[in-house]
Image (cartoon, rainbow, N blue to C red; front, side, top):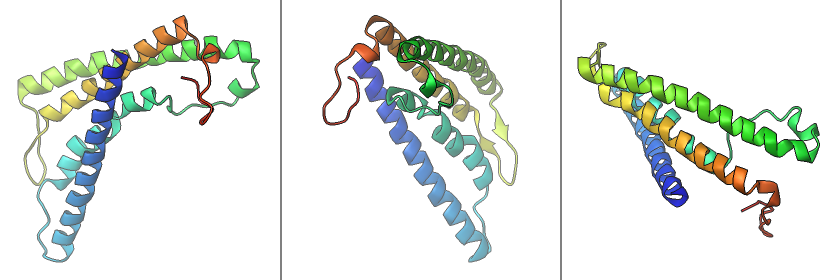
Length: 172
């Protein structure tokens, strides 16, 4: 299951990267259209805010957790004795599961409601946005699954007891 989650998180981060590139191209084309041809692309702001940004932010969450590279504040952590760090790591992982899980749970209801009402955004152009509402729970649920697997793995075989890779200095 761990390998499957890692591969899926890689696909999600590729999709997020593609959304970022598409956003860049779309906005660039809109700016060129607006200032060179005096004809901006209708609905650019709505598509950027409702699709590209959501995909760019929420789809890579699981990959960030697979890589163990979330944003952390190590102000006191580095000063703690080594034996206290593994329990704090487990506590942090459990808190992240709870936080992501709550957000995923709430976002599922929001996505289903958006689907039921056929949510659109009115601006210069009508943009159907209900499909993008499902990107949040997808990214959050995958991040939760990755964190649950990490929690169980770290509980059974703590990272500080695993052998180090000689070339990188990282635990396996």
